[in-house]
Image 1 (cartoon, rainbow, N blue to C red):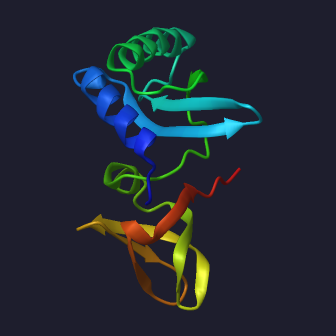
Image 2 (tube, helix red, strand yellow; image 1 turned 45 degrees about the vertical axis):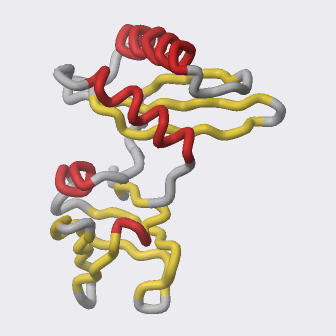
Length: 153
C-alpha cells in the first residue's frame, strides 16, 4: 500500500508511544478538506476505544508533532476509532480476520479485475491469500489499494 511522507513520519512518531499499551495504531491520514489540512489518527483496542483514549492520545500526538516540527501547515487533528469497516492494511489486520469475507481493491488487475472479494485464507511474506469461489488469489501487499471487511448483519 502506498503511503505519503506525513503518514510515515507520524506513524514512526506515534508507534513507540503506543508500545506496551493495549492501543493499536490502525491508520493515519493527512488530507486537505477545503482550505484546512486534517490529520486523522485511527486507533483501536480489544475492549473498544473510549473518548478518554482519544483525548489522551490527541494531546500526546499534538505535543510530539510540535516538538519534532513535523507539520508546518496549520492542521486539525482528529483521533478516533476506525469503526466497523476499518481498513485492513497490515499483516496483523489480515491475520486477525482469517476466515472472514473481505473486499480488496488493487492498483493493477488480478484475473482482469481490480476489485475482488473472498475469504482471507492466510497472509505471509507480504502476500494476501484470498479464497474466492473459483480459486485462491495471491495479492501482494504493495498492490492493495484498499481492503476492508464485508459487514454482514
